[in-house]
Length: 120
Image 1: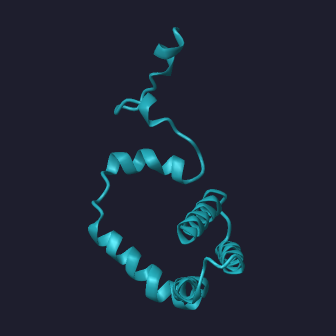
Image 2: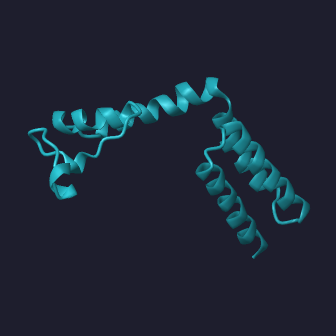
């Protein structure tokens, strides 16, 4: 039962770190701290540390992560993802470049529906 509690604490900590958009090195350090606490309380053993190190070390070193993990995953997703339609790509570009556009308030011709919504 103690192992399950520490697994939930570990997953909750990883989720909070992802939500807060912590850097990878800070996240790994935080998770290592959780592992140390779990070890001190006697619930995390050698096998858990081995799995953590097998996952954390390659992810923490950019020279290993980029060519062997990130590049193959991106190549796979580029291969399986469908091509976007030109109109949807055109509508997304202002949002992707830092601006915001409400795609639902513009009809395909390009005139805005905002005057009709304001009651003018």
